[in-house]
Image (tube, rainbow, N blue to C red):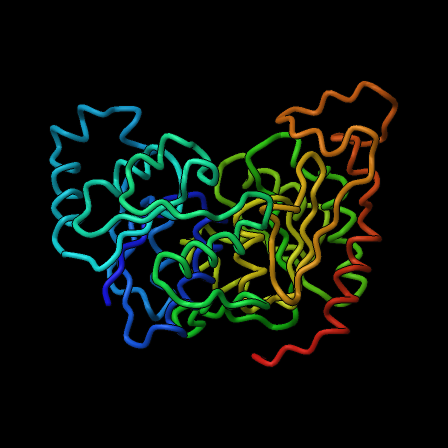
Length: 346
């Protein structure tokens, strides 16, 4: 059985979908997948042994210069790859109009969420088979339900298995245990206060840990350099591919992150991790794994779901809600996970 998945972004959403792929592979012997995904995340599906072909798409880039995508031949090349195979099923796991349009052009019966379940109800018009998956559950659970209904097997319950083949991730060389700090994120309001990162690095050193700081933008690089400048145990990493960062996470003793895609990857790799939520909530899309703990700020205006902190009251840090998640508590939570949960993969 050959299935095409359309799940283009974001990083956390792509990681979530791996669990549904593992379910299907367990229930349908010999099933194989192709996957349409944003070019920035094209490495991720390749880590799953049931994925054959990854078809990169560049919607984020093309929307800024659509005619250039046509003139350069990129769109024609993408459409050729998309239509090169006849599929037994084409599953839109995104539920957006843009993903439905991609699904509609593939060859094979099209499956997706019905109008009530899709993030954008109009997307359901692009499917031949509209499936009912109630809203309100975690994104991973809903994806597992969607695949089970589309491919007609009993829904698997219990802990999600993301099926990542660790042999495809290059483990880094290290002269001691290290923690990874994932300090980069999109919204200004989701950034844990920089002085807290500095203090957390100091506490980590006192407990015998190195601190490794990956980054993905100039702003993240400069923040990492400032954190490392005050802590001799902290190391700013070189710019890395997603596969290289995945190897760093897989080799870490623990991970601390904010609400960002890499935190989902760390959780999927079953690395002890703490993810910090201030303006957002982990309820429907939080990092998920057996060695994962999500900490939410307890503050009058949290979660505000605002990109910028609008709190005007007295506070020692910004965003103010994070004062309820100080470094001492974060490290204590991380050490508790590390101590209580054995790692069968190490």
